[in-house]
Image (cartoon, rainbow, N blue to C red; front, top):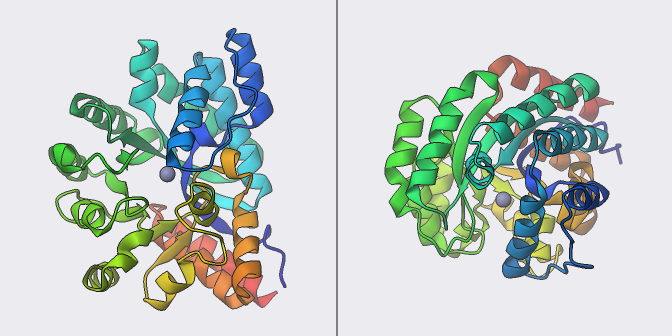
Length: 324
Ligand SMILES: [Zn+2]
């Protein structure tokens, strides 16, 4: 068994606001006189969104956003992550705080510092919750466009999948036309219809989660033929009760179906599981060989929006790991 920290890995689905160290969140909350609940047990999507909202609302100043971005890089690098596409709800924070640009500028600066300190590469994906108005999705697109040269590569829908993607079709068409990438959460809690919407009128190039594609054989074949990668987040799915246990997680069936399966952390502050640990737990649950593990890591790199030369460098690193 090779060491999984030294395996070059890409994390394509991780929310900055759900990756804050608990002690940092407590300090930031205290600095603003916000009292956090003594405990926030997460057992399903509803309790997750409640905890997510509490964490999000603690963040108020440039220094708060900058700090969580720097610390995120340190924690991700400690897991041996070489490249991360980090999700951040820039427009939501901007509207809440009455300064559209500040939270995004702070996070970009923090990621820049964190990259310099810890040697990983990051890009930013701006997410928009489906439960929020279309006007904010347009504001998200404007932020993405005006910061595309600073590392914002994509945008997409997050939030409760009971809210349909249809109202946002024009926003994401415009995003693609502007040269941005589009990734939606779909097929996590909701069924095949959410995936169909995401990859057709929704303009998505990748699926956040997408695990429920298996509910529909025809759709599975379509996603395979189109080569649309799935950002699978096993321990998040177990925590939010979308899979009964890791041993019963659909990841092996997604692989057997010939789909492009990537491994990601989604909400590491809540699961307590970093990226190397996600791989380790999969190896343990399914008895995967190092070559299967290397294949999952390669899929993550290939599904990324990293430039070709960086992808080639990461893939060469995975080959070296497997040969070692
Ligand atoms: Zn997510």
